[in-house]
Amino acid sequence: MSSIFSRIISGEIPSYKVAENKYYYAFLDINPLSKGHTLVVPKKEVDKLFDLDDETYQGLFMFCKEVAAGIKRSFACDRVALTVIGLEVPHVHVHLIPINTMRDMDFTKPKLKFDDEQLKIIAKQIQDRI
Amino acid sequence: MSSIFSRIISGEIPSYKVAENKYYYAFLDINPLSKGHTLVVPKKEVDKLFDLDDETYQGLFMFCKEVAAGIKRSFACDRVALTVIGLEVPHVHVHLIPINTMRDMDFTKPKLKFDDEQLKIIAKQIQDRI
Image (cartoon, rainbow over all chains, first blue to last red; front, side):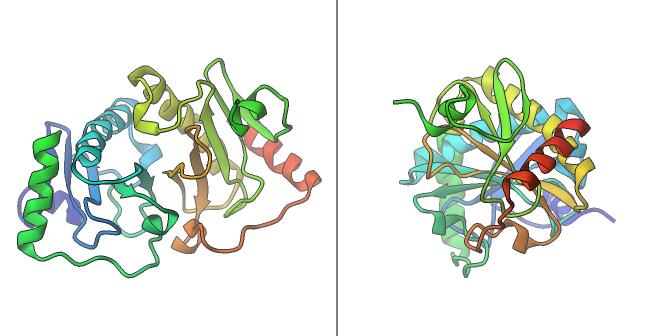
């Protein structure tokens, strides 16, 4: 069965798309740690980051660099953190999280909640600045 | 003034080196979240990840891939997580953390403690498996 991310990429499950090219797809985390928290995934479905072939792996991080620039231009933050954990969904995903303090990176804290309208605006803001 | 990481790279401050080439340096985090927690830094002193030039940025992640393979072969773990936060030292550093559960990635938990002898053994284990 396809991963939830493959189903998002195919459009079967709706998402707040931030950027896309032939190989990668970026969309908002709907349970964000901070405003603008984005997930970047390779369209190729591979469980673990370091199992990606070199080309897909390098391309993924270059795509992240472009998306992170859009995030940084959209929201007041000290920097955009990048993290790959991957225990929950067996499909490589990079978290890009605008942060000001270590607290913004704490995955154990309660997530922020935005409604549909707000998420559309956030995604559009980033899209327009990539 | 040079960052603490530049002083580690130059040998002014001792470290438990795991790997090194002309452009990058990998060494143990002495306040690790899990056994084998390693830091990878570009020798070029730049504060923020996404401010690295493309070549240094791509090379950094390729170097991380090699180091992560050594970590994975050295310690029982589900996978090696990768995270770049960077609020504390203004010199890009990638955390490579062998993890089994989300708890292994919790930067707010008390850090593990290993003595000098143990850290030497851990660094050697990874070195030998890269």
